[in-house]
Length: 146
Image (cartoon, rainbow, N blue to C red; front, side, top):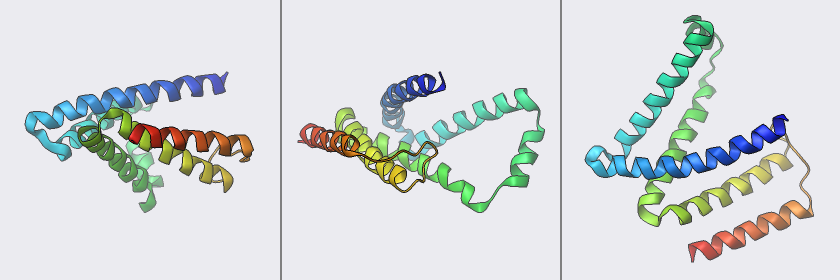
């Protein structure tokens, strides 16, 4: 059951990302700029998550986060911000399909490497089928980019 939910969430996230980038390009084009669009995006996400956690467990969650925080905890936020920036920039410069296919190809390659080294939570062995699928995806990406 949880694997099915994970699949549905991943598909929904992919669709949401495509829509998010179209909207963010429109925000950038209204004169706010890339940084302004990223600030709006991150601020809204932060406010929604803080509101949910405040409702769920009260304001003490902030103290709990501070008590357990390590300097390297900022890396996912930096990577996520870069991801959103690169997506919006790519949509404006390359279009949606080319940007998405390049991002997906890079994600797949990194995902295979993370699984191969056992660094991902649900790690799995990398077999011939996985490598063949990756080769097909990279070939498809090359065709889309051309």
